[in-house]
Image (cartoon, rainbow, N blue to C red; front, side, top):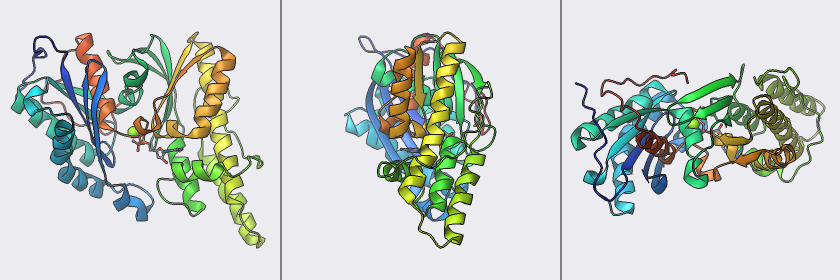
Length: 349
Ligand SMILES: Nc1ncnc2c1ncn2[C@@H]1O[C@H](COP(=O)(O)OP(=O)(O)OP(=O)(O)O)[C@@H](O)[C@H]1O
Ligand SMILES: [Mg+2]
């Protein structure tokens, strides 16, 4: 395939319509964004096919993307009465993520871009998780701080300019990601996968009275560690079983959750202070968590930091976030990607 890129074709009187494609994990997401406005956001998920394994099975995810890709694009376009030829640019997640899953979306995006004669923008999945917030709250002031908490990442990022991928990683998880910890703790409490939503719900009926450890809370870095917390919860639950006592699931969920969000919010505020930044944006699936949203709001208000968190439905993987970042790149005049751009499962920021 040869490079086939060019300036964005823009019809007179209308801003470019960007088609966004996301297939990095188990969600086939398609979004349509014009000039920072979300027009369509359609999703096909294979999550039910993975639930019995307690985690995403890459081969199952990739096959599901193949089946869902074209119908999900058709659904997005027909929802808003648009046609293929209305699309002015195609954006796609090129990494990080599951290699086979990414390849399906990247191949589809290349095919659409080539067939429609429009530019292709390969985008970074984590940058897209941050960019989705602009659909609800407008342009992100530069520099902003971003806390990215998802199934595979817990990262603090200084973001001078998202559109040009000017993102500086300050800290990351040294072991389990925040979402991964939710999924593992949910499993040991007998809750379904993915574990974030059921723990969030159970915690509302419990009290955070069990003192689980807060690793790295005061180490002065912006790194996170949640595997010790997960082990501490497992040991606590095992001790209850051994003693023949019932496990107070709601209290365990609330206490585990409090330990996670305490460290996430404390480090985010500290990172803002250390870098003189007064806007914090939280993205990724764990940003849907009700306690994280509440505690972040309280601590940011106390610290004079403006908090921006997308609505829960936009926090987990979706196509809108990819279209949002593509739209920002088009507007900033970023050079499109060559059609040879590969899917990169370990893409760094
Ligand atoms: N309300 C919630 N509270 C806590 N965690 C949640 C909530 N909703 C979803 N999650 C967690 O979010 C994660 C999924 O988020 P997301 O879709 O962003 O991750 P991913 O795309 O698999 O990972 P990455 O973005 O790092 O590649 C899961 O681990 C899930 O348990
Ligand atoms: Mg994600």
